[in-house]
Length: 177
Image (cartoon, rainbow, N blue to C red):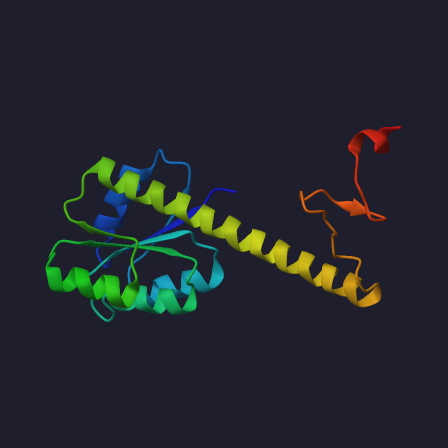
């Protein structure tokens, strides 16, 4: 399944322009024209990346990113603004914990690379979460085995680190005989 990218801007012509710039990329593009509309989409769909304008009526991009950080922390967040300032960037970083801060007009290659890298980061974090769940399940299984058969999960080794079975080092050659 293709990753979902949500573009948020109160100006539909700007989301259409971004969609054209990203149309050949291997993901599905969704769009919203307000922070509230974006939050509704996020509640219904598993979005990987949100690219939002900063200056929108009702809810700024930074406020939206702050809500997404709390309600959907796995989503990668990118701010795109035409009115960049150090204060706006710091606020977006500190409140929304954004992945990237881009300035309009954004070059095609710049937005393409920012979204690609955000999706790669999203995939890595998803894989990390999945592997941590596997480790937790395996730990639970080992804990149950140890409770049922005390000592079963302990491995005895000699001073060289070889595994001891019945107090003799394990020899892989003799296991094959």
